[in-house]
Image 1 (cartoon, rainbow, N blue to C red):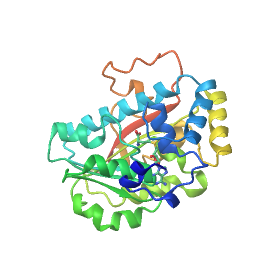
Image 2: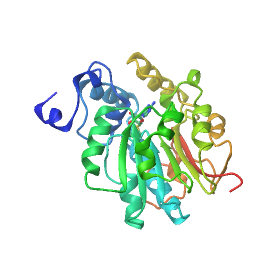
Image 3: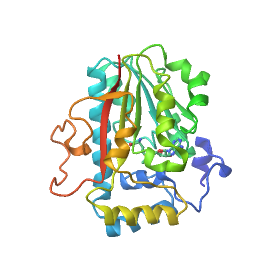
Image 4: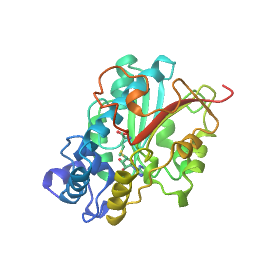
Length: 273
Ligand SMILES: C[S@@+](CC[C@H](N)C(=O)[O-])C[C@H]1O[C@@H](n2cnc3c(N)ncnc32)[C@H](O)[C@@H]1O
């Protein structure tokens, strides 16, 4: 750790330097600088057998941004971005506040590097904060005074879970975790989600899962049907669950559509609202 890192507020016991972190591996694939040798090793080992991975991550970011633009156009002004990651270009508050400077955002991540850099980026922004918390405990997060200082849960909120739930194993019941957030939402709220999906690329997906597991990081790619279950209680907006490059595309992705995309995503509106 360098002196600069200390100034940003990291604590040495906040992270295990011998274990790759999903936030930092993703940062490396996106061309960021907030990663360590152990993260770069996993990221480059994966790219060695799956060269498209950095582009897959950029496509996921573009999907996040299109989803937020859609949500703003649907009237949403409050966002709860779970597993928000290390900030890069086009973060949720930037996209939402470009459309409406009054839009409010709570970012949540477990990773101290992600939280520290988010905090630095958000300094001076009164409508967006970051909370260091574990999304697997919806009750504590939804009760936190920090969250309530920015979001009014009596009004519609978009819960954003991009490239996140594949880090939650089946043994921790991710569908129940999503339901914990859903049940706290006001009518008119939304869920926007993307998830790693192995359909069509099982062999490469298996290798990636194995790489994460060997590094001690839980990683579970799921079928389309399993991801659809996370939208229980929501009505998917058009085009439903789709690979992110083809979800309301705006022409900017450039992903070769002949190749299977190892992910799926969608946006759903709370049913009955
Ligand atoms: C691949 S990144 C995705 C970042 C961002 N959502 C995006 O799509 O650009 C996954 C993020 O989820 C975070 N994460 C994983 N498990 C988490 C948990 N249990 N609670 C909070 N954050 C978590 C990681 O730290 C990481 O920053």
